[in-house]
Image 1: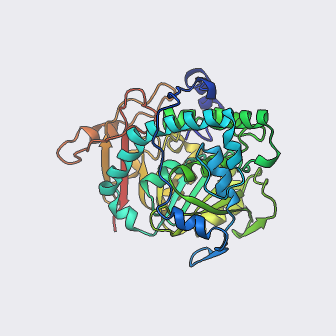
Image 2 (image 1 turned 45 degrees about the vertical axis):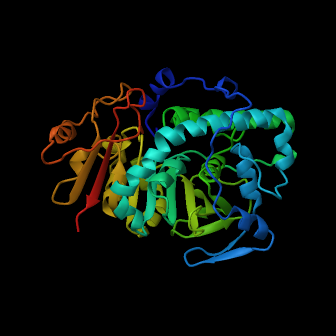
Image 3 (image 1 turned 180 degrees about the vertical axis):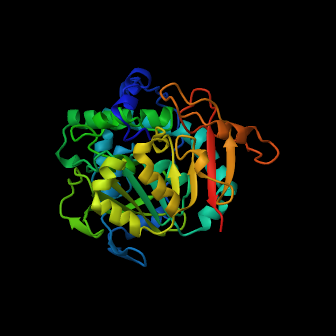
Length: 414
């Protein structure tokens, strides 16, 4: 995600990347066509039969997780997915607004599933086999609401920890929305995902507008959309505030999460093995100036266990001095770092400490950024004898127009 950059860096974005992608302008499939969508969990029938009888799960990591199906029902509606039996929102699918939204969303989702998500899964089966078997948390700073790509790379992780500047927000109250309000909301959801569909990343200056309270209202709705679209079932969600001593205080209202160090946790059921997983998202500033003053964040990260870090389309922030403390934190806590060249510079992975695998191709950074070209990384990509860069069968990153993308996997040597 393009996130937490200085105003000088962000100012370029509006000229180059802001391309209107409104809901009504999406390509429509003929009404008679059938468009593939992500399948529901394999135990769909069981879920439906037991929805009213299963009240809670007892999880060894999360404790007692009470089942509240309303979050899953709302998420399916705003993801353009047909309601499961018993949903009070099934009747809302009859209007033309939702029907059009459903058709357009299905079409766009099918495109990225075929060209990006499915190849990511196959690639990860081989190249991330060790990481997928680990029980380490997935640490995804500068993420925005992008649980989508983290989950596809690491589908069975118990915990996904996302951090960015956008507010947590809340799911919409569908019972108190008229047709026009609903149309505006669905339009905003689709528009906010336009760059994910087209480019694979969010753009910070657009997120600040599209995820404010008057539009999609935060990252939470999009996180939930991604979860149900990938076949998972949302079990419950809770809001917390991170205290200075690193502990968390649960917040009582569904609509909180607008302040720094507020976080939301979404508990969901794995679509393959029915285990309970959790994604947490925290609104916070990770730049050195803010991080130095944030005792709660420093305490939490100091106590954080070893993890797998994922970085994508990170605006090269970790190349700069004003993100040096957080860069050092990532290097000290990570067993594996999966990133593109916009993450931690290659020079911070010395061969005696890290084993580095290269994928795709390395070319000049896009024109929005200057002073971040890595000569040593280019030399490594040219080394076909020692480094032997491998092909990358999908496009993920800033070079979406040319598909000249790269991925770097750095594994800490034991």
